Amino acid sequence: MNFHCELSLAGIIISMTDLSPARILAIETSCDETACAIVENGRALLSSVVASQMEIHARYGGVYPEVASRQHVLSVTPVVEQALAQAHLTLKDIDAIAVTQGPGLAGSLVVGMNMAKGLALGSGLPLVGVNHLEGHLYSAWVYTADDPVPPEPQFPLMALLVSGGHTELNLMTDHLTYQRLGATLDDAAGEAFDKVARLLELPYPGGPSIQKSAEEGDPRRFNFPRSWMDGTYNFSFSGVKTAVLYETRELKKRSATLPIPDLAASFQQAVVDVLFKKTMEAAREYGAKEILVAGGVSANRALRQTFRAQTEFPVHIPPLSLCTDNAAMIASAGYFRHALGHVSDMNMDVFPTWTLNGL
Ligand code: KG4
Ligand code: ZN
Image (tube, rainbow, N blue to C red; front, side, top):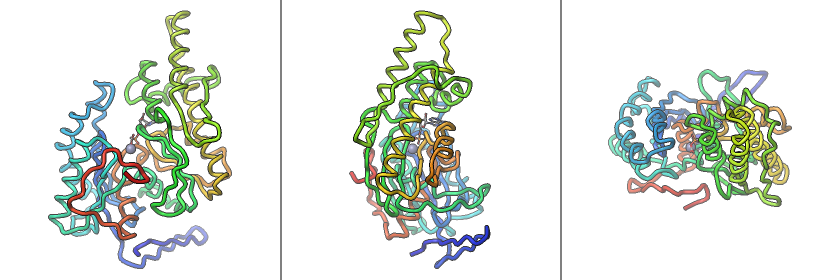
């Protein structure tokens, strides 16, 4: 197996690799980012290019699927060329092509899939289909050239995945092994940020806007409900969203100007409290050694600070640039899949509703 092993001695990293480095080129087009990246041995980022369609979708207040797939068609070839150029590599230096197979928008996934198949066919390289959610978790393995090499996550790991479409807690006892302990029963955490931002008339995308506004606000001003979903590791964020709506309506009756920063900060605090406390409970109950937080919402400063400052567990959170959708995370997951012998068929199809635990 081509695992890369590191020993840390008094701050000096000694690397031992049983084979030559494995470089994976990955393509990600599951939603509204066209991305390509090259990662070595599942961890070292050699290049990452993300063509964001954010400005195009902002005028619709959310992702417009038809527009997204057309943009992917326009961007995918230059994005792959840029990723190779940035790493000063050609396809001859690559060992496998990884691609997001799902979940995501069918029309968007197909564009990346066809590009990856074309590259694999043309170069004779193996093709590895990757689950986008698995990719988010593996973003915590990746480090950029600017970072000191962070320690590799150790199993058993309690993994909190918080994105725009998913919120779930998984116990990872080994690479590519997930025991789902709970998930949201309604809105994903990122979806709740986006919806609350819209009702507070903050710009799209909602998560970063709420964070920015919250930085000026008082998180204790409004005591929004926390859904603990007692006795389970499930989540629910529709209650807090509705509470913000009702509070906003009441405030509007009394005053023309809303205390937006206080509303944003109090909402953010309610979401962070639930995500943090439930992850800690699960980590203790299942005897996890370490904690991993990934997905778009893991970019949230309050969430990162809470996880970093308030727990006895070592915590792995990806660098900011790898929290939201990117292809480096797909390359990392693709590396571990490929190292364990997973190779996909050229006839593979996209799985728009794929979960981490199967179809
Ligand atoms: O992982 P991602 O890029 O796409 C999905 O796979 O869904 O996550 C996007 C989500 C959006 O809902 C966005 O509002 C949220 O992540 N997000 C944030 C922040 N940055 C992105 N939420 C809270 N705070 C942020 N700083
Ligand atoms: Zn994502």
